[in-house]
Image 1 (cartoon, rainbow, N blue to C red):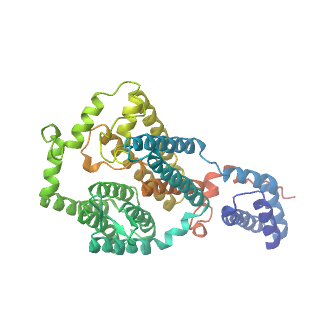
Image 2 (cartoon, helix red, strand yellow):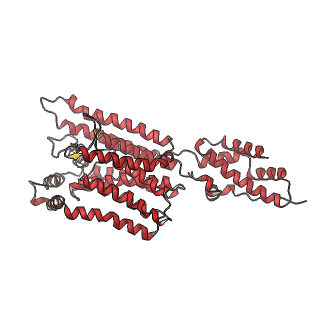
Image 3 (cartoon, one colour):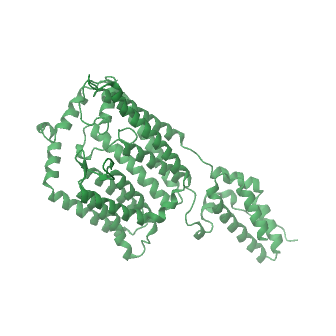
Length: 456
């Protein structure tokens, strides 16, 4: 009789195009069939006859298969992809016109266009990465979470030993001509922490130290590297994940307090940080010092017209405007109306992501989606607030998908690829063999078969 059941399951799965779900579908349906067969056998029906009755009551293989195919059918979020494309194109155009501000008699326009070409190339490469991670099952990364986490610690150790800098910031040097920022390392910290949170058995009190491991260690490392913005981003993400996890409430509070201790120690002992923050807050009286950037932004925004001043600008009013202050340029160029439209598009993108996080059956995939949603959201929020001169420039980062920067572009698309990949597999359970009827009993009511027969 096993052959009859397996043949039926194979026929059902032949109608399901998403092959990754086949094994789980077979297991769940097999459990249904075996459960009802046992019930009929207990009522005195022969096993062979019971199997036929159950399969008949389940419905034809084509009907069940087509219904399951609809449930697991790939639904690409075209609206979000269109918004990302819009932001990328906006970034390319903005970078091109900003680069024209560098042009002099000794610097041809061709040189200025190199900025645009680089941005286009890495945007295309980012789209390829998005597609790869969308197709690839990212659940396979979970088992390597600890390896990735400790590997990143080693890389940070290399950063702190070598002390190589670029534009005044520590970078990871991979050779004489290759250096990358700390952002990719924080990206990997976030990825590995999502897996650690799901792997560890938090019911055991002795495992509490894992909570300190994924909070305190990265925070201390980032503060030693004097990366205030990344420290804030990472701490916000990891604490959000912890408070949404199944860790006991008292343990969550202990982890929170433990993670804040090194932050307060750093703030209390760093006279340079406190001095720079105070001067940035009182920027109108410190225009020749730390308040210069905020002072310039203040007067640039003061002259912005409702519909903007056009893309072309004379000179370069802010340093690294193509990256750290690209939204300031967009405000100047498109005006408050254009800026409002861009921000509304960004809001729609993030709303569409957060609105789907509650639909996940897999806790690891939910952690991935939430973590990388927060990564993109916090970066965008800090950049927009900084562009509006509402926060000190210390916390001002790059705008995802828009700002110039190879790492920023690639990791923005990779993060969104993780989110799409997670959503695609939202109905799958990594530990499906431990959950007998979980997914289909809750999500597919039409498979709740009511057997009807007459004992004649």
